[in-house]
Image 1 (cartoon, rainbow, N blue to C red):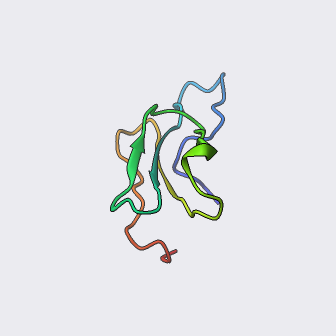
Image 2: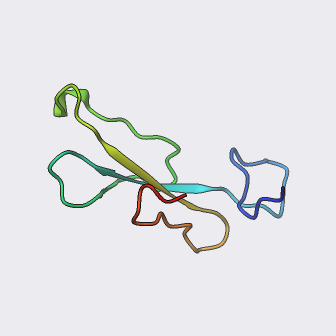
Length: 81
């Protein structure tokens, strides 16, 4: 299989491939839409557990960017594959 996206983690000696960046979005219970988590390029983000009640479901989405300035956007249907 050939992957068109840059690899992650980046290969330091590769002059062709760029660095993959991520944009994270979170939808907490009661929120009408996903909220952008600051820090594009972050490979992870933290959630403050004190902000939620045990059992709350958080919907997390990630959009992936590589050396091309075009996002691989998530669809709107979470059940679609």
